[in-house]
Image (cartoon, rainbow, N blue to C red):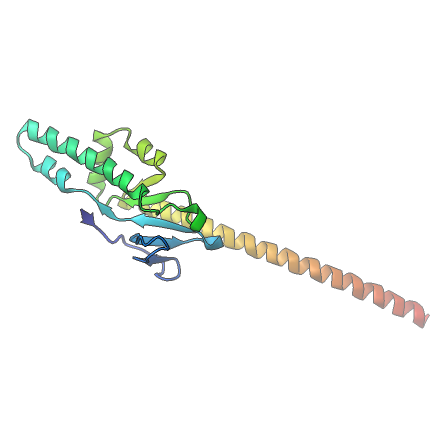
Length: 183
């Protein structure tokens, strides 16, 4: 297994936490904190042993054997993640989990040798991310968080304006009454 800590611009503890034990006892590598107390879990352990054997093999049969083993390892890893309760909507997770593929060439090799891998992973509710796509996924998450925050603040502002309008109307009504009494 290859383990990688992806470069992050988010703040640990504010936007994400690392290696936090969940209610189920599982411990995803990263947990991204979302609005409404939702979380998105990410696992960064990825099987690369057979990939390395495949690209370093000299005999065609060995390349094929290690490539097939690598594809099997990746699918097994996808399936394994789904058994870890990283997706547990009853306990506040979103409906998918991220699996980080640490090296672009490994991600490309996996897709090239298993064209249905992305679809398979998505059917398992696992989103595969490479270093370049991870930033895009995190940017979408960040944008969603920002949009949610703006939406919440807009609702708060509308509520404040609504309360102010009621108070202003009551003030104007009382002021008009006072004016009539003075006349």
